[in-house]
Amino acid sequence: MRQPLVVGNWKMNGSLGQTSELLASIEDNINDKIGCEIGVCTPFVYLAAAIKLQSSITIGAQTVSEYASGAYTGEVSADMLSDIGCYWVLVGHSERRVLFNEHDQQLVLKAKAAQQAGLLPIYCIGETEKQYKAGETFEVIAQQLNYLLADSDVDLERLVLAYEPVWAIGTGLTATPEEAQKVHAFIRQLVAKSSASMAKKLRILYGGSVKPDNAALLFEQQDIDGGLIGGASLDAEAFLSICQKA
Ligand code: PEP
Image 1 (cartoon, helix red, strand yellow):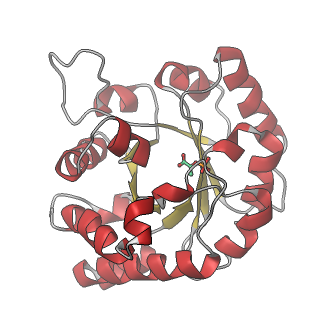
Image 2 (tube, rainbow, N blue to C red):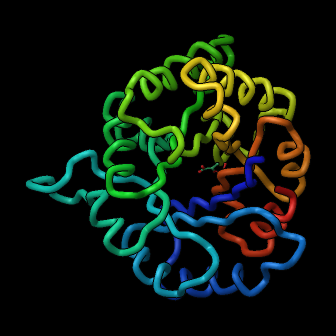
């Protein structure tokens, strides 16, 4: 059985005060109806404060350097994140791929650096609107995933995948549950070619405008093991309502 997981991606939002307030209001309102694991990825500068709150919510970063140390001004290494008690790290979020030109080879290095430091990467893949409209979703997903699967140093047991159609992120558009399920099943089949037992255990999250009113149908799908939530994770009530559906 795969334990459902819901992770909030706060992106570049909030302040020190808001970080504590939002985390406290999530933590204080976790109830018996919520059976999923919950994570939150805060901006780098608020990680230490979030971790110090010692709630049941596990804390993650939104990106990481592929390098171990050295002259990489502005970068943050996996060891540094691990050192302060970070648990997750997002790798390959589409905003990193599109706005900061992060590419597949580099993202595999980031995932490996994260794993070597003891972090759990949440590795994001997904097609753009243009690719979706051209019917290239499965081709794009296979290409992105194959970079990861081809590297024997990547430990699939210590990784979560997130399928996030780029056209659904922050747009209010979502893949239909059936559409999302088809892609998730395809991802699991691809992973099964590397290891059938790993494919059964691997958690695959869906991300892209998940809200309280569409979460249940998405999370009901056989191969959807929870969600990566952007906008709705900045509101404790909405985020918890989504968690309750996982
Ligand atoms: C995201 O940033 O990963 C995301 C899914 O955002 P949103 O939920 O706002 O679409």
